Structures are given as structure tokens and as C-alpha cells.
Amino acid sequence: MDIAGILAQFEIKGAVKEVKPLGNGLINDTYRVVTEGELPDYVLQGINNAIFQDVDLLQHNIEVVTAHIRSKLEAAGSTDIDRKVLQFVKARDGKTYYRDEADRYWRVMVYIPDTVTNEAVTPESAYDCGKAFGNFEKMLVDVPEPLGETIPDFHNMELRMRQLREAVANDAAGRLDEVRDIVDELERDAAEMCKAERLHREGKLPKRICHCDTKVNNMLFDRDGQVLCVIDLDTVMPSFIFSDYGDFLRTGANFTAEDDPDLSHVGFNEAIFKAFTKGYLESASEFLTPIEVEHLPYAVALFPFMQCVRFLTDYINGDTYYKIKYPTHNLDRTRNQLALYHDVRRHDQMMADFIQGLL
Ligand code: GN1
Ligand code: MG
Image (cartoon, rainbow, N blue to C red; front, side, top):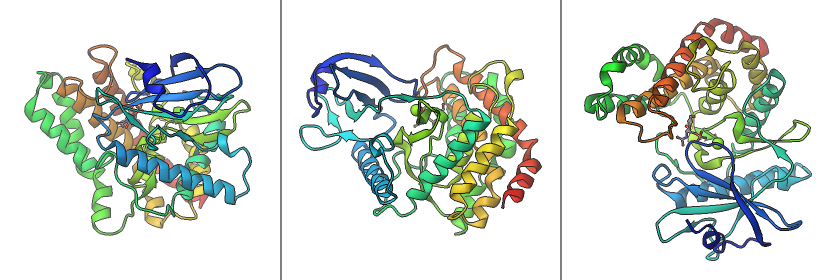
């Protein structure tokens, strides 16, 4: 891969000293481009266009969102704005991405220096994360133009069930026998978990601009632990707010990583749930409708359930979507998320009571 040739397509300043891998996303390939001297470093990303098939739409969404956030920060008199919103570097043709001869897509952002990313959440940071993601949604309630779905029906539970059923019907990797009990278990709760789509069809649940990948490692913190900004904007699209609220807790409030094969480590962390929910509602309650608030505990259960369905579908299909490190990686992830789902359900009443108490 001709990294130097790709970088030459972008209007970057300074001589490149080193290019090294950055982060641990499961989808895109990300590198830090270190430049000589005082000039800024950059982040180079190869966009996974098997997953994000409409790169033009993807980058359009991101441009609209970052410009809107920037204008909100300016209007609020915020300082240090370049560290609070991502800035994309234009390619020679004026676009914010470049397509190489091999039909791979690339983009470049300015690297925000002196930042820290975290893989784990503490009750203290969970409160700030809740505020930050609530605030992110709040800034985007009035985006000036409609955004597209960068992955159509990304968090549509009905679609995810259809994909699972299709995988089961095909059994492409011959793995179905091994996981049939898990499929049956998921089927038992599937109708209940598809409630959001029903409420939406009945006109009771709106779609809003959401981040849709609200993991703590998709936020940048400064060296004092303050949240600076939300990153990884590929999945910013219209969705139910459950996406942001529920998916954060799926990873943040699990006592262990989503792929820990030791299920005795898996469990729902009440302290993190409470702190995150408090922060989230402090910034989001002014625009949320009662039906959205009432279904927040549903959202907490929905995301481990949905992720379990997605990992299992990929396992049955023979690992065509998520990067894996060993053959049963997706199966371990599936079992982990199922265990988390069950533990969350044991907290249904606690969650409802806690949210009621905050209002
Ligand atoms: C993917 O690449 P990463 O880790 O940010 C996935 C999420 C899943 C997550 C599970 C576009 O996100 O939806 O929740 O893996 N992103 C996409 O680890 O499918
Ligand atoms: Mg990420």
C-alpha cells in the first residue's frame, strides 16, 4: 500500500516522519501520521467501504455534523474549539476523501494533540460521558439538512432478526448445530425487543440524529480527564435515541470486555448505569419525549440483545463482518452479550425506578 502516495493526495502541511497504527476499531483501518517539527499530526483512515457503501453520503453527513457542532460551539463562546470537533483535510479535488486506483477510500483528519482515549469507564467518567453524548444529540437536534443512513437500518432490530434467520437458513459455515440453543433463546425475546420499530410505525417514536457507536473509546479526553469531543462519526445518522444511550451502557456498564470468554466476569454495573443515566438526562431531558424516557431501560436491554444477534449472525455466516482474532471469537462475543442481556433484564425494575427518581 502506497501510504505516501495517498497522503500526497491531501493538503497536509509538513513532512511525514512516521505512519503508525492507531486505535483498535473493528471496521476501518486507522493510522497516525506523525509530521516533522511543530506542525500538526494527522489521522489517516482507510474507510471500510464494504460496510459503508456510500462514501459520498458518509462524508457528507460528517461534514454537515462537524460544521454544525463547530457553529454551536462558536455561538456558545466555547474556547479551544479545534480540540472539541473533528476537522477533515481536503483532498486535491476539494472532497474530504480520496479514492485510490484499487477503489479504496481514504480520508485525513487533523490529529488532536494531548488527548487520551479510554477503554474502560469509571462511575466518575460515566457521568461525563452521559453528559457528552446527551449534549452531542442536543447539538444535532436542529441540523440544517437531512442526513442519510450510512448503513441503512443499522440499528433496526427487525432487520437484525431477519439477517439472523437468513444466516440460520443458509448455515453457510456449518456452525448451526453448535448454536441452535442460542438461536432459540433469542427468538423467545425477539418480538419484545422489536418494540422500537413498532412504536415508530405507530408514529410514537421519532428518529433523531444519533452517534450510533457510543463506546467510551469513541471519545477524546484531555489530560485532566475532561471530555473533549466525540469521534468516529461514520455511524452518525437518524436513529432512535436508544442507540446512543443503550449502546454506551452495553460496553461501558459491562464488568468486562465484550469478548471476554469467561462469563463469570460478565455483568451489569449498576453504578455506571446510574452515573451515565444521570449525566445523559441532564443534557438530553430537555428534548426527549416521555415515550423516549420511559423506554430507556428497554434500550439498555436492546443493545446487548442486538449485538448478540449480530455477532451470532456473523459466526453462523463464517465471520464475514467483524474482524476476528481466533475461530470462535464471534461465538465468545455472542455468549458474552447474551449473558449481559440476561443480567440487564434482572435490573429492569431498578432502572425504571432510578430514572423515575431523576425526573
Ligand atoms: C463495530 O469498529 P467499532 O468497534 O467502532 C460496529 C458496532 C458494534 C461494534 C462491536 C459499523 O464498531 O456497531 O457495536 O463493532 N460498527 C459497525 O464491537 O458495524
Ligand atoms: Mg471506534
